[in-house]
Image 1 (cartoon, one colour):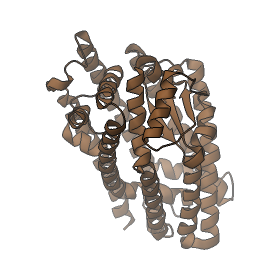
Image 2 (cartoon, helix red, strand yellow):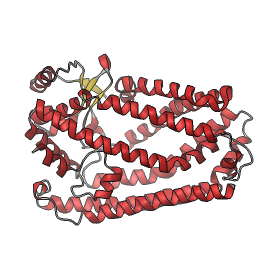
Image 3 (cartoon, one colour):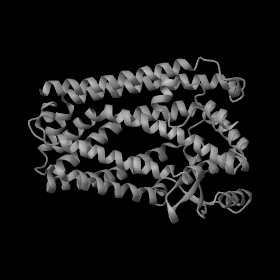
Image 4 (spheres, one colour):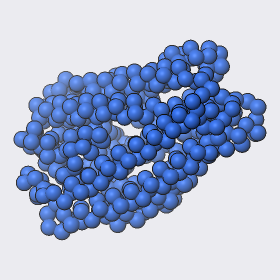
Length: 407
């Protein structure tokens, strides 16, 4: 029986990898298609050739890195996970410490092995095409902060879940669900004030034409917000963005400095109107509820198999370490996760259309269209994505569809 489960694990990993390779291949080939007439001016002259070159280079590098990850995963499934478990079991008799060590070493090794690929992507490809602005010193600092944050938050949540499992057995799942949900709500409220400052500097938007027009927008939309901040995104990338964060008195609008530098006041107001639409249409709240429900489903399904020795035998272990159970579960859960992701992306694309319509109602629709076109040009966005790739991966509709709805 355990051999059948192991074969199922391998089959899921291979199927997921093969599907991703097919989708990437189709999407890359789709770039040879002619641009829609409404988008031809986004990449004028030589910029179109630069866009094709950037996307082609990124695709080839993506194939290489994905093959590396796939082969590494296969290696770990065949004997790596069990060997690591056997080693950490010799370091401590505590099941909690074993699991913490297991995931700490696994996460550290995974990050170190993927770092050369990330460095090449950041300092060679992104640098070549004018996107990267991060320095090696800042890159290393971000890496160290991410490790520390992952150890504190990830290690803390794992310890809590294991403690609940020790106390309540397979009934742990609903208590863990409550705890993780409360943590998710807390992070949603305080992300910009607690997490973001570790990596970026945020300053209140100065008084002037932009702030005045944003205040006018908030008044017209019945959306009062006093916290409008500018974030120094330009120290890492030339890409621009804007987003909402938090709820109630903790909500704030965050504008990337690159957005302010490269866009007109009316375009920025239209972008903020779009983000306001997400809030007013309760898309953020719906997304949080969706995440909480999905977390509950994951924990419930995990509780059904955590005590089944067969899933541990599938990896060749005679013990029942919590961490190996998690590894097997998430591989088995991957098809369910993919289906949920499809539904989530479909809903998200619908939400984007709703937010665009909201922006058109409370700001200038043509300014939003100009901003979207400019953002696509600055970021060398994919203008002819394959429909299947969009179906599986896009949380935002393709630009051509958004412009058609706006115009």
